[in-house]
Image 1: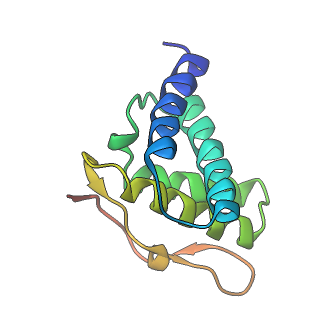
Image 2: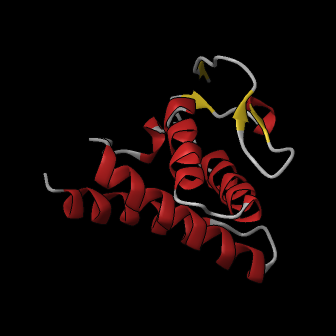
Length: 122
C-alpha cells in the first residue's frame, strides 16, 4: 500500500471516531482533529502502520523529534501531543497506552528526552 493509501485508510478511522465523539468544545475538537491528521500524515509517510489502534509511544516520540527537527513551536508540539492522546483515548481496542508528556523535558525552549521509554500494553 502506498503512503497515500495508508493516509486515506488512517484518515477514515479517525473520521469515524470524530463522528462518534460527543465530548469537548467545538473549537478545541477542530484543532485536535487538525493536529491528529498531521500526525497521521507523518505516520503514513514514515511507517507501515495501518491501524490507529496500533499507535505506540515510539511513534509518538519519533513524531515529537520530527516536529522539533523541523522547528515547530513548543506550543504546537504540546498541542499536537494533547490531540494525539485525546483521540487515542477514544480508541476502544488500542494496543498501547500512550504516556503523558513527562517523557520529554520542554524547558528552556528545547526538547530533550527524560528517559528511555517502553510501550505499555493496555
